[in-house]
Amino acid sequence: MLRRTAQFSKQAARSNHRISFTPDPVKGEAFRSYQEHVVQHAKGTTTLWRNISFLSLPLLAVCAYYVVPKEIHHVEHMEALVKLPDDQWPVEMDYQNMRHRKFFWGDKSLFWGPTNHQISKE
Image (tube, rainbow, N blue to C red):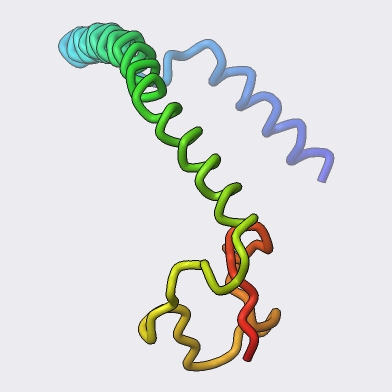
């Protein structure tokens, strides 16, 4: 076993002095041009997404300017609706709150809340 190890180390030492491949300048230039193409594409993509990000912030501000007053009015309406007596609540139609089977967590949906749903007397 020691002899095999010595032979292997001699072969490994000899193989270090040899070039195990021959360089191909055509393939090397093709690889370099591909890498340059990848870098240019990455620069273009980065610029595109930076511009999209700069455009999205003002658009979000405009949307917030439009939506926030409507939501404030909606919250005020819901707070006033909670204070109404049960007989003045909007009439619940037959097609609303249909339950074909019970939820495994109870009889209320995930979006049920005591401030925005009338408690049914049934």
